[in-house]
Image 1 (cartoon, one colour):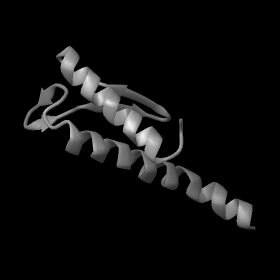
Image 2 (image 1 turned 90 degrees about the vertical axis):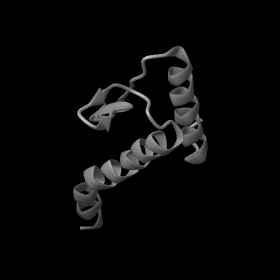
Image 3 (image 1 turned 45 degrees about the horizontal axis):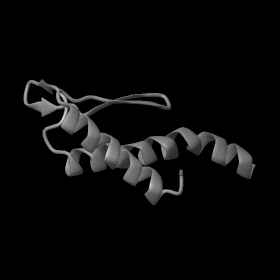
Length: 77
């Protein structure tokens, strides 16, 4: 029964976890990525893939540094 419960919650927990990365990118590298309407888009996520978007090499490096920080915070390196 417990494994079924975990199985059902897994996508939700993964989504919440990935949302933390998105928020960290938005806060640490404001204005990165293309602007669509009034919305800056520093990343595109689909399933377990993450694409970082930037116009300049400096911004790309800032996004990569932020991703590295995220991975370090959650013991993924």
